[in-house]
Image (cartoon, rainbow over all chains, first blue to last red):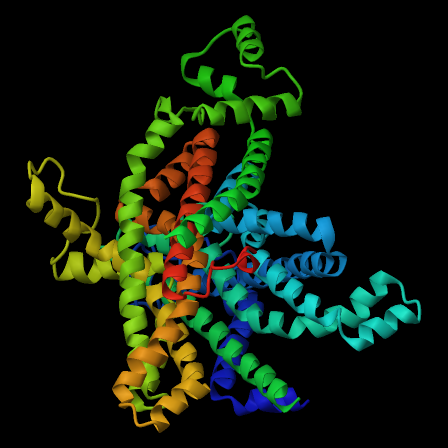
Length: 276
Length: 329
């Protein structure tokens, strides 16, 4: 509760949360806001923005409504961004807890694997994975998570290493609690706050990676994506630059919203720590 | 100097298991990719069933996965990364043709991001909370949210299409016949936009890190003691605060090497720079799996070497590092 009130005290956090709430509403209500398939042709090709009432942001080369595609693109961006971040944090936390608690060769092996994943550029890995498995929403989520789980893993491991020496963990061991129960109920809850602070960076990174993948033509072809829209507009960049500019602005606003929310979360967590 | 050498040796030894894991990983991806080397080799020329079986036997592809991994590692040891179907050349040859452009692009982007970013970070962090500080913080936060490839397109619209100041793509003017300094100037002009698109995001990152880091160092005892002793504020700023605040940024530089290499894939595609990143995109588009995995391996190697350089630089900045065994981890 006090953490929430500190979040409310952070102007950045409020602004970010407002932006994200608005985007979430747009994403959830997309079928109501612009019914039908956003990839349908609705008007003359390359209508300029603010020219026709039906298509306020203009149409693309095929005569598809840019606003409808951006609204539906919000669904893809937010879904993929949140899902990939969730998978990355869940896997990273599991690996980090395991490595930190078990120690010994398990820790050594897990950390080497983490290091190997950090050595390979995450975007190249995502590219290779999607091109091997094929572009589906699930494949893109996994591909992004492949490059993003190492950060939380290292962070959680470092936290666990310091937490496992504390008295309450020792007493849990003394009363005969199962090691898994200790990991799940005693250690993990204390190791998570710094990961929560990292979450905004991971979500923002995931959204940008999804956009870059679909920009390169590796997005789900049956969905409207912001990256795909930007790529689509490239071929007419000289005559109709707005086709690439609108979806890019949507991306910038979204990522900015995520970062600002993150600042608010950090403010809420950091203050708690200094009072403790 | 001896300290640096032993550091390099330790790091290289530590890189061996990591590289081995990367190789096993790329081999696994290669196994999961549809088709094998024989399919790829005969894809263009064609061949009957007998030839296919013959080649599979000759190349050892009819053996179990472990033997094939062994063959793969043995080939890598001979610097044989396989055959690129898309280019009809050995993978290594194709990669080595493209690598210099990417290193140039990355090096320039790192220099821009690190140099200007830390400098602006010093400006912002010299008086935390001032108007300049607020403006730089807001500006960098906005910059940090801009996807590099989109920024690249916007830069093309403004500087290449509207103002016509700079070329919109490529690494140099084709068949310009330029040599020496004129050619270097031509390449530099072509690199301005891609380097900005790739580097500005990291510039924002370094600015923010430097600022945070400086705000912390200002509060530490030695900085306050120096001010209390009457050392001029400007001298404390540079000699005590900025120098110490720089250390976490150097660490970050190594961590960002992999991300930046990934970012150059999209930037090179936007600006048609014939580098490693664009090559990765081409490999994906033409389903050239051996080439893509070769790029991943070389990319990992580049990241390891950049990190090595960063470690040596860090040891030079901070005399406490690498002097004892306890920092080996």
